[in-house]
Figure 1 (cartoon, one colour):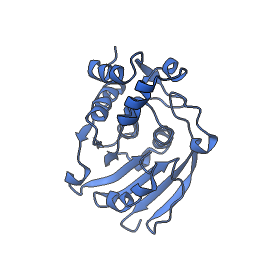
Figure 2 (cartoon, rainbow, N blue to C red):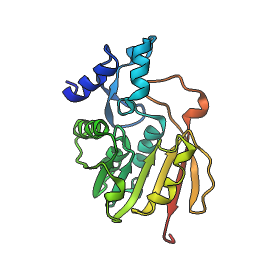
Figure 3 (cartoon, helix red, strand yellow):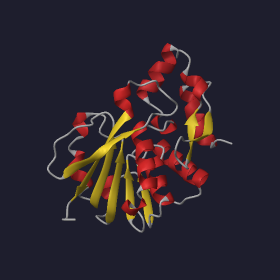
Figure 4 (cartoon, rainbow, N blue to C red):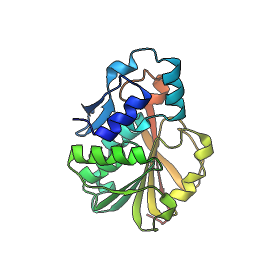
Length: 219
């Protein structure tokens, strides 16, 4: 059964919407996601207003998060035995993938209390333990790696690229919206293919996820 508080929050935005424990394609993880049926209908003007004011982004698995989860599963050396923080965690997919791949510690960090509730529910669904934080800048500079998936959707967020390295020795950034940026510390590792779930029928360009790495120390 879906977590009650999350279901109630979703129902207050979209009356008929339901959270469903959903398996992710080409990924061993599951998430509580909004059901497909509610993405195939027209929303009322009131629903649209509520969604725009308080988007339930924690009820989706965004393409960048799915790409990051698949990448960590295939390349566990990035997180195995390390202390990791998942910045702007949303559903918690990146942090859960890190824990699943053998991270020593994972902290899911998000400003939205509902997102942190979603992270807790999704961690339980996958049988992993996370820590939780609602203030990135209150965290100590103690992390080996900062994971960042689908945060640079607005170029105004690009100054965060420096902030990530204020709390972690390295950063992995996955994003399909702002896929190209120039920063002296970040190098592109490649471009991954993924999609948002439930499928929003996004343009193909948003299914191409750029992956970047940065380190404040010589490797």
